[in-house]
Image 1 (cartoon, rainbow, N blue to C red):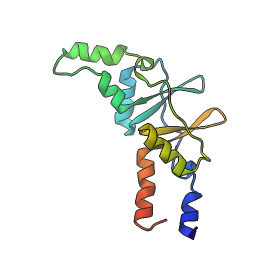
Image 2: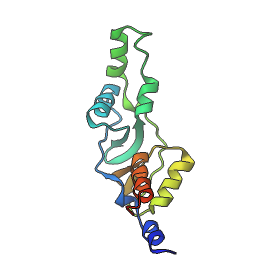
Image 3: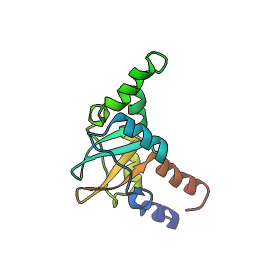
Length: 147
């Protein structure tokens, strides 16, 4: 194995994940999710209750659940965002990874499960999130010769 290949295979999720991701609780509202997506510029939000990961909410989930502004009154549109709880919209069965998982293994899991992110768990606690963008950053580094 070449030195470059060995260095690449030694990379772990912790080398590319975003630590301490923004989270929501199941009892938060869809409005809270929309505001967080806009404020933080995130596309995936882990849902945590009592310190445990209970789900994941994506920007796509929010868009799917939101009514069309063209087909509803502004009041009805706002009511959906103000009254819908995250637990009603979130994905419950979420694949996860650990900080020490090889990056190639986590990327393969994301590819095979067609998911845009993997929450990163350590000792039962959420410690980060690995997103498609993080994996693409690695690919850009390798393809441009920076790794």
